Length: 247
Ligand SMILES: *[C@@H]1O[C@H](CO)[C@@H](O)[C@H](O)[C@H]1NC(C)=O
Ligand SMILES: *[C@@H]1O[C@H](CO)[C@@H](O)[C@H](O)[C@H]1NC(C)=O
Ligand SMILES: *[C@@H]1O[C@H](CO)[C@@H](O)[C@H](O)[C@H]1NC(C)=O
Image 1 (cartoon, rainbow, N blue to C red):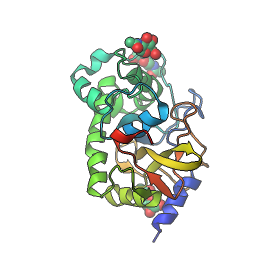
Image 2 (tube, helix red, strand yellow):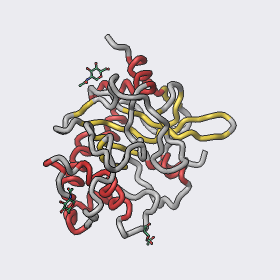
Image 3 (cartoon, helix red, strand yellow):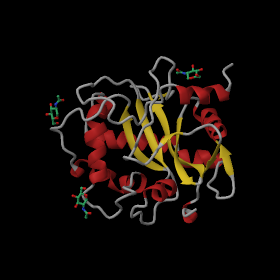
């Protein structure tokens, strides 16, 4: 039996390569895993001090990322017309938290160019309609927000969770190793805020461990420059509620 604590340590010590943007050049097209990246709006909006406007009170999609390649086809621009029928779900589940009033779909365009054009190597994802549609399908099937709720893991300002408890709970539901990422809230003492949860899929879109012993060591990674998003350290973590994001 592998102990949950060990799994946690494994995820810290090893790959968990998820959001390692920029480590690979665009000519490195080999990837083996898709990462469904969820982010927690209350944390994102607090950390980035952006212009979040009425952020949702549920986990939303950051992206669906192949693990080891980026920007695979520069001559395949994002075209919102191709996902017209998905727009209501896109706005609901894949909102641009940081630029809520940008109607140029810059966030989706960025995700498509950087990640979608690589994911499109799979027949199941080889168009914008398929890429965004399948991402939404996977997101809905995972139902992360309600799963956490059922597991008794709910946003709170006066209760810290243990990172290992959150990780174990996710393993108990999805039967694979997730990657749990935090932002550091620097206020004299270091407080971790739950920020992102990644769940991985194989190329045939089956749930898959986000970490494997065979992979190279992880690096600190950044979803947005300089924001200090990193794999959560074992220990206490705050899962902040939406309406009290100013701590
Ligand atoms: C890049 O995308 C364009 C537009 O869809 C397509 O015509 C072209 O074949 C793609 N190139 C590669 C290398 O896949
Ligand atoms: C939306 O974002 C794009 C790209 O950053 C920018 O060029 C454009 O001016 C923005 N539009 C609005 C309405 O903020
Ligand atoms: C996922 O990781 C766990 C723990 O390391 C391991 O027992 C399991 O076999 C792995 N599953 C796959 C599909 O690799």
